[in-house]
Amino acid sequence: MQLALKQIIVQPGHQVLIQDVSWQQFETILDELGERRAARISYSSGMLEIMVPLPEHEKDKEIIGDLVKILLEELGISFEALGSTTFKSEQMKQAIEADTCFYIKNYQAVIGKNRIDLTVDPPPDLAIEIDITSRTKFENYQRLGVPELWRYTRNGLQINLLQDGKYVESNSSPNFPGIPIIEVINQTVKQNLSVGRSQAIREFRGWVREHI
View 1 (cartoon, rainbow, N blue to C red):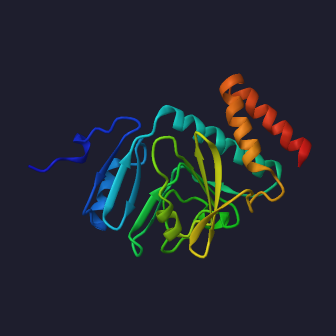
View 2: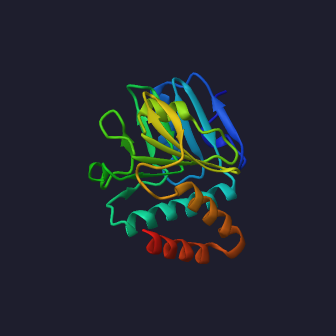
View 3: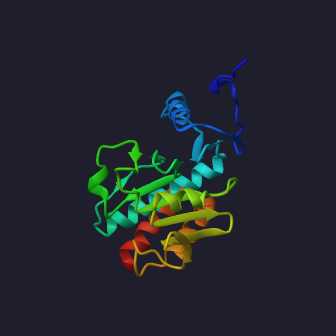
């Protein structure tokens, strides 16, 4: 008897690994899961991972995404925010969903698009992963050519830049030169826990306007 995907229940903070999944099967699974779902997926050369994040994961994702938007808006930089869009390349047999992502230099190339095929579309300029319960799939992002990857863990923000096909940890972001990104992101996320999101966001926007 063959199980249907809807029969598989994944608890928040847990994952399911399915091996020997063909690209055609992966595409069918994506369609069956649909766009409006809590689960995140990654696919690499036949191995499919389905993970459901914890509520704290979603809170960190939302506030860090909002902070990036504020920075881009206050700097007057055009961008497209694609959220947890599925990035995939059949040619490379890779796919992943960032927690949130931004097209900055290449924003015009993805206006109006909900799914990105990296065989023909450019990768996002910045992808962000909240790594509370799962291990960020660096290899997927490396193969897909994402130039900047932020990884937020319980220890704070880590910036990774793609150099010669591998990620190298950095203290600064080329998308926000001269801004102490790690310091201000960590401080605001922590502040969010004590004073609430609205006040933390207001104070962050005030800091940006004062210092940039």
